[in-house]
Length: 423
Image (cartoon, rainbow, N blue to C red):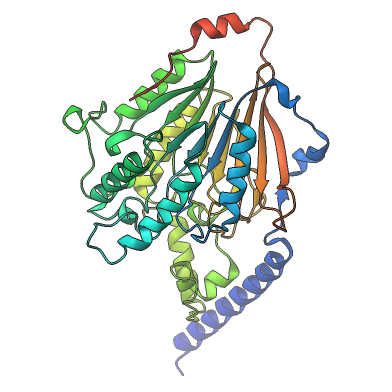
């Protein structure tokens, strides 16, 4: 064998051996922490910290994403948990559905073979929300836009019309598939802003301008509008909702398991166990560095994320909530609060550490509790191990402190925007 080929053989053998050692070590580490809640050392003792009395609650918000694969037999644990939350929360509350409402590709045309199954999954969610006395806000995700394909706008409009017809009290925002932002005054001194983050990464037709019912006339306009709204509402507590996370330790943030390096096709289908050692590592590397359109690394997503963070970083204590990754994550970074609550019907790997204060690979959702004194608390709710048991709360944290003495309730009331929503 020529010396050059022999050298190449030794190099390939060494690289393969090192990769195998790294994957084995990684697999052993993952086995120790997979599906266990991660709480950063800075949050130690969280269970001893108690929120104010329930009697002082001003408004509650449930943030739940990626419900598109809920069980349709009436025994879905997340919908049952959500219904218990809604009954306890009462009319002074809001449920925000953070997109990916129907898997795998949203609501197809009536003649499509998958229409009946899609309707059943959507109807299951609507039925669970029908008797709720509070406000319901639906967002759309990439799956609702036919996974970003060129005909996705038609899928989005069908789903929006279906929700409006079958649950008229619900808001589907932003309307008409526009990018937004849309504002909703949830309560005194509490404002919700909704963005259609899929709009920036979508292929094919996207609505824009007055002819489509949108106020935005170009791709940058929503970020200017978001900045102006936040500037005008510094006196209010603000929740911004979109489907796509801005920080994530999971798949769309470029984090993969050892198994996905050896069996990379399981990322596309959970039963695709085709071993591709060494070659399989190129797929996670590609997703981490270049990305599919639903990944943070993709140029479209990266540009949208960069512009959005540029605005949000200028306004401390804003809470940004998203779904998309199928787990629960909380980040406190540069005075902002960033949530990933996409564990409504599926779970997927999430890596602990990094910037995350909390992460858990488990079904569940986040609740935001706002109190009359200005405090805001994050609660993590997960189904109980048994149907008869109480909901598990595996993490909570005070996100916002009580109001400064100078900000009286009368001043807040005078400055608050009127009820309703507008783009």
